[in-house]
Length: 481
Image (cartoon, rainbow, N blue to C red; front, side):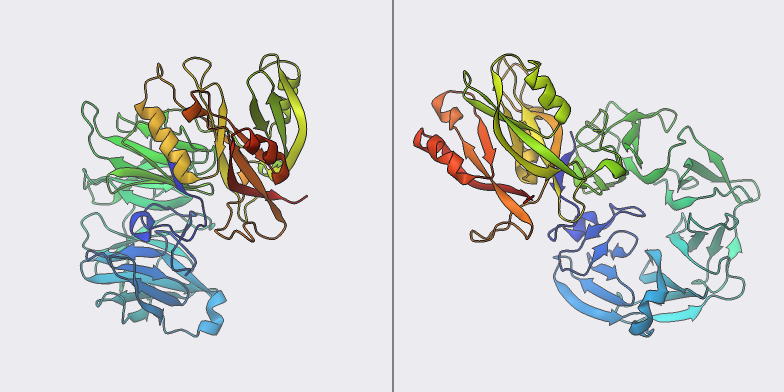
């Protein structure tokens, strides 16, 4: 199961963990508030120093995440014209030299390099032999002795791959005419120095030198768009695994790319990128940042509404008198099924409801609410909902470690989107939202199935508290409409 650690856009993501996790198009917010960063514009040096590139400013952090230098104008260009500059990513470190580039709307290509950890920079305009005149991607060549460069995937120009062995002063085309179109980036195989992969909008392509030393590219069995590629260490009795992020989740291959299986249990069916870092798999998407131990997250991703269908949803509450349990659902289809007896007799609407958002329906601040269910036997015969990523991950981990013959909470997926509350008792919810309060029946200590109630009218919890329930405060925030 993939464990969610932080939603997209939260300010406390560790750059030290995630700066290599986000491929082209993904975003990781630096905890110093310098804006969105990914491996498109962040680089960790061998001593742990992190360089966060903006246009035109640069921030430097030490290995502990402390800011040691800020607002370095690494380009030397006029910051008032920064909207016409384009960052060339990702930044590349070759030995003690860091390379990064800028282009202008007019087509100029400039390569910058630093030999003192990002504090001072030298630059030169690319010569007329430069292969492109607009945006491109940089990557170290396989042996780390030079630079590779290729055009970004969304420009209508001839696909090609170029190499420089003299700090970008001269470039030579090194593909044989087979370089794949719409390439997002290139990833080198760490176990095979002569093998590289092109991540493209048309699948995963494999590149190897031909007898003349030019790189020949050929198709693999993967034809979906690929946003990230990770090589997972060998895990006995398996051979190594190749893990890719696609438009609909994450896939894994244990036969060197000959076949692929879904590995997206706990993820939404949206574009993801992946990396293998710090002994774990990391997947990033618009839904947040997730980790998986080894390759034990087999399963399909959870479907999401089409983008045009995302938005407000009504969350309807039900009550079962015999069980003394409450339940809520944002699915009109599920609510109609409960009305028709699909969940068994005894469930009835309470008349209480609130407006939340569909999955990914509130891109400004919404998070996905985890939904869990126990079982009829051995229990608990109840549902539980939480917006807390820590609480959700803990229950997922407990599920993985607890046999199905023992009581446990089983992750059913994400229920709907809501807004996390602030640590402010007087104003826990942002403007245009209202708090949803949670009460707990203390089922565990009473020897009963645990159950919670979620309401926007806190007065409704008074009679429950009088019967021994616990008012747990604000669980999340929803639309005031």
